[in-house]
Image (cartoon, rainbow, N blue to C red; front, side):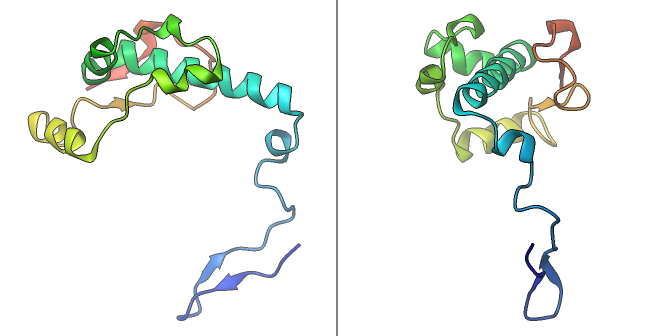
Length: 121
């Protein structure tokens, strides 16, 4: 356990913790189990973006990516990067926050939501 760090004005920057881990159940799991969890979450996010936002669906379609194309963590390289400029243009087109996704509920409630569960603006 470490003592809290404070900034130059005396505000707490890093409050003291009871554990050296933020999420011990994830940070200490075996590598194979961690990679399985990472893949599950990657698939969930790609599915959510593709079905919940025209912005991401168009971005993925330009490179021929569909949610079912994500089969391993190595497939992360298939996902096209999003630039700040693209996000700015999207926000200008659909103010105030663009055609971005909003969480369908608490993160982790369902590993792969159905398209009708996704929320988009």
